Image (cartoon, rainbow, N blue to C red):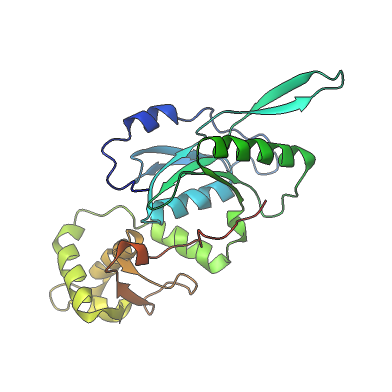
Length: 251
C-alpha cells in the first residue's frame, strides 16, 4: 500500500480518533505510568497507559516507514455467553492501528512481557483478529519490553532528537552532503570534520536528529554513542528500524 502519496488523512483522523481516555486500571502498583507526549508524526498529543505502550509509540515515531498511527482507534465487541446461556458482549478498545508504507493497516494490542495468556485474552485476540480480517487488516499482540534493553535505550535516546532545533537549519544540509560523499563515518569524526566552522558539540545533535528522522542509519543493536558508525540512507526502506516487522511479536 502506498500511504506516502495519500492526499488526505482527514477521514482516518476522524474515524480512528481515540475511543476512550487512558486510565490506571490494571496498573495499581504503578500509578504513574500513564502519560502523553506531542507526536511529531501525528502533530497531536498521543496518550499511553503503560511503559510498553510508550516504548512502542516511540518506535512508531522513529520508523520512517510508519506514515500514520492511531491510538485507541476502534471499538470491538467481545462476544460471550453468560451463566444463563444468553449471548452478551463487552466493548474492547485495542491499542494502536498502524499505517506502514508498503503494508496493509495493522492493528496492535500491546502487552507486558510477563503477562500470561488467559481465556479472556484469547477471546479478545480471536475477536480482534476477526475484526481486522473483515477489514483487510493484520492483527498482532506485541510485547515491546521484550526488545533487547540496548535497542530500547537507543530508541528513547533518539526520540529526544526527533524535533529539529532552530540552529539546525544552518548545518543540516552540509552534514547531509558530507556524509553522502563519505558514505559512512563515526559520529565523532563526522562532527569533528566541521571544525573550525562549527564546534563538534554543535554538530552532534544535528547528526542524532538525522538518525532519528531516517536520513542516516546506525546499528541500533549496539549502544549509540559518538563512536557509532553512521551511514547515509540512499533509500527510505534501508533506514534504521527498531523492530523486525516481518516477525510475529507474541500472542
